[in-house]
Length: 272
Length: 194
Image (cartoon, rainbow over all chains, first blue to last red; front, top):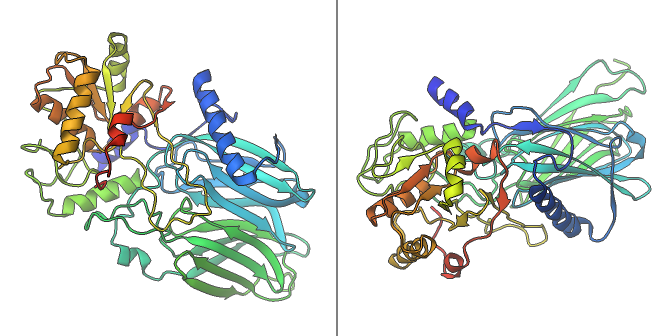
């Protein structure tokens, strides 16, 4: 497999992050095409609402060299967290570009959000922040990765679905009063894209993905995610919240085929 | 990439209904007797008898002679149960000026589609079987190998195969949005993309 790994590097299929600019790919024809593509997608999602570029409200980090286009980690940083109501993640050149819509609740600290996504081809990735005053602000990075939407999972569908809906939650750091807690939620779910061919039967596995996931602490919502086939299998979501000490952290997830799962986790408390 | 290798490893473990033995490594893939009829995704041979294997650098030096660029990447397949209220906006980027015939490397093809493929290449080469033609799709994709083999068997003498395909090209160079070849797309229904 060493040769395979070397070959893989040679193929340059791994992801790389080029520049910071939204249209970083080079010649002007390409820039114009990518800008037109983004306009088409933005219109389909946001209608005729205007979207202002931002350097401060949201920043996108993607790896310089990820090994797997089906598992590209994305970190959204939103330092002006008190202004943020929601964020939309769009992977422009994915056939289903609208990867995620995350709405933050009263218990949220939106300063950082981590997701893992599928990237189908070299593409701009856009994050659009919706501020509490109703305005939209966009940032973009160019990500080099390809084939992520159709990449098979390398196991049978049955195996991929084993334990579907199981969840784990990890809290990091010592809870302190008034300080946000960093949490990582792991959900076992294949999130089948519907574009993956079963390598044994050579049939396409129907799309089965988490389309709704909400996290709350006690009665207070932390965030609600509207998901898509562009979210990687076995979703891992990193987020921050402000513990109110009023109950467990509850996660409710559902998928497009009627699956529904609910789990509660003991919330870290400053008094412990 | 890891998933791709995983997929290929699984593939290798299966009995593939094709002439050649399944490949167990990317460096030892024998050429099948005829066309490859196994899954499109998998390790491909290092050679294509009767054709020249090229990389992106070599293609770049060929471009001034205006070779026919044949892209056979499969079209993105819309999931049958994809919700109607979500945007489905497939797009395809390729080597600029490429002619995209999605799935033209699938084997077997219907006789009608195979004939159309050869007719279109005949038109694109102006009937000159010595005209440079380059077939490509993606890395570890048999489609472009099959397309090249079809052309060799049809008597084309200047066939080139670009195994790294669009990915190899776009790593260092610009791509352009390409729509399916209208004549190819007009033939309905499309082959199942396998």
